Length: 76
Image 1 (tube, helix red, strand yellow):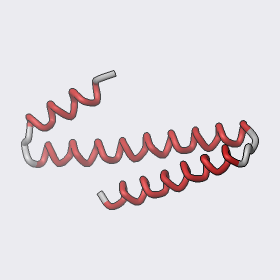
Image 2: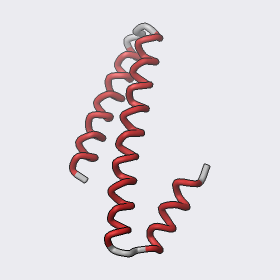
Image 3: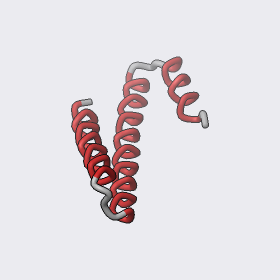
Image 4: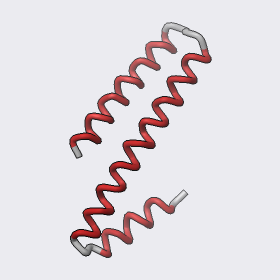
């Protein structure tokens, strides 16, 4: 989980950078590009977390936890 925490800290830094860009009224296109980068990084961190949790469920034969995770990710 340490690698996920590291990723999330980087994402926080990216978000802080976006806030500064907005405050500094920087070019809209550059801001949008940074938003897309944050979105991609967050999706990547989510995928890694999901994989680790599912692997843990499988290793521990925890079908109840697996069902809860699957229910959560299938919600819209």
